[in-house]
Image 1 (cartoon, one colour):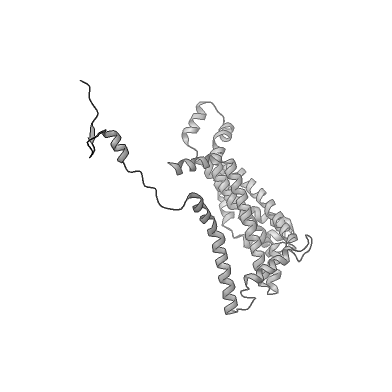
Image 2 (cartoon, one colour):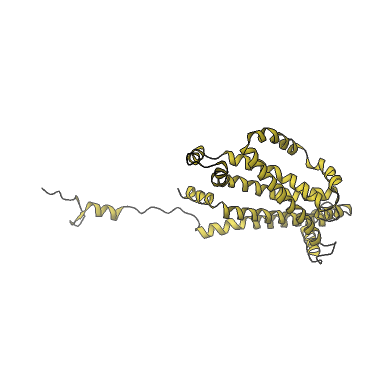
Length: 302
């Protein structure tokens, strides 16, 4: 005997299948209250400039009301005028920022390339050859423990005034993060992948190129990102100790004349350069290490 679907009787006496009645009376899921996605993104992107504007307005108001000496705390408006004045100079004018900024960037970028390249190379070597790890890693740790400001005068004596000393000091600051990040990244590879490659008769170079280096790229780019700022710091420290051009030289000259507004404007330039350098390295890393971004998207949607 065929089974019939259960029915519900409505108040007017008509019969309706229970499944249809349930589908009709089931409450729709309530939407979580909140702003639309575009609104949330817009508000999120306004936090940084909004907080900066509030900080500058509060700073300007404090200087206007309290009137501290300008060599102690200049107003943001005065710092802005010094910044515009320095940026409006000709490229070869020593009173402007462009010549000094170019000198600092040349030392920082050359040291960044040298230090990061040496750190990655040595990180690969000590990861692949344990005898080199036991010999070289203690020396690298000992060198990193030395304060770079203390050895900067020695670097100046050995390499003289000019871009070479900036490059060497920037290289020293960027070397160790890449060494450690490369070494750790290469040693975090899943052992199953290594066993699979060995079962396929892959040699050491093939395993390094096809498995270890791709797996270590996120750690390597984290070190590159960290070292981007360190390279600028190294160049500035070298300029503080002794140099004929650079943003560090401008800061010292402004300090000697109690021109604190120019000191702040130079610091603003360094901060902007550091942010741009960091953003560039991050963009390249996201482009090359694309699989980590996909994993983050999958984790966010799961």
